[in-house]
Length: 390
Ligand SMILES: Cc1cc2nc3c(=O)[nH]c(=O)nc-3n(C[C@H](O)[C@H](O)[C@H](O)COP(=O)(O)OP(=O)(O)OC[C@H]3O[C@@H](n4cnc5c(N)ncnc54)[C@H](O)[C@@H]3O)c2cc1C
Image (cartoon, rainbow, N blue to C red; front, top):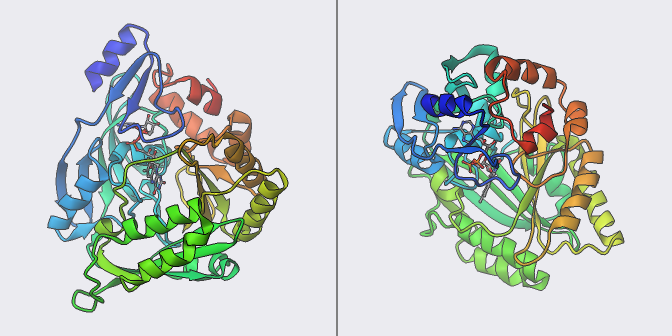
């Protein structure tokens, strides 16, 4: 990687590191050099409550290897194919009031900077690397905090959205939670999970399938609202609960469909913001067929993490296949920005430096780190220029 950076520098080319390219925003797009990091695979060491892993390893391969050591990561996003570095680069999160993002688990990182030098980053600079957007250098190895592996028992049920979304309510009360909400009908599905000791789980015979079953309900919610009830009945057949290692239960292995946008709101503004979004869409006759996915997380320390400095409710919107999500995403961006929201860097959004500067009080610290790590802006691209300036 260091040689590749030096070669590009010698030719005056700009570089974008890329993982699996799962981001919908053009963060890794460049007409110059794209450095594919997916060959940097494998766990280097597992010791105590730390793992060192090469930056291009997929999350799923990391969870599988950690499981052999009786360990895991506290955070389980809903996709396993992402690379460790790509997920850290955009602040990838899971859901749970106390569960920090993948970026929050980083305790050290090896990085090739813009001059082609290899650095081990720790201490305060880590708050730049957490959610570094690939703007500081190429991560080659990352040290992450691990936790003991436990079984997670996940339940699903329908509920009243006002109660489900209330600050301090169900979303904040379990190790893992999410709510799928169809805004026009206000029909909602709640999912929540807590660790259980081996032997105490309720055997469902359908391990690993909560995602498939639950996602099925979300799709039905999006396609035909009247199918919600039969779908719930169908999910009730597996008892409404599934138990297994969290990474096997929570990761959604279905192929990616449609584009997505996600917004990080101050936790207490969730309910009013969603009501406003529903009303604004109805007023403009924008169809909200796809349900929104609501998740929560604690305040983050990463200077550019969308949950920086505040407990957060995440609202994800998905475009339906074959439909242009542009008008819906633009409306959601306007309403949720007004509600204090910040966009997930990997989702579709229209933010530029003007909004970033207002929303991120530690932007100057990030820029100072960028000046030290990448003084010549070797890792810039058009999208980063728009977001962070030259
Ligand atoms: C199906 C699906 C499910 C998802 N689920 C979630 C979820 O549950 N929670 C959530 O928060 N997000 C989720 N996302 C978004 C996802 O986490 C981000 O898009 C993530 O960045 C993708 O990782 P990647 O390896 O594809 O990174 P890429 O899209 O390839 O890159 C992302 C950023 O990281 C940088 N980068 C990549 N490799 C390196 C490196 N080696 N060194 C330095 N920088 C690097 C890139 O330059 C870019 O800025 C999901 C996306 C998809 C498609």
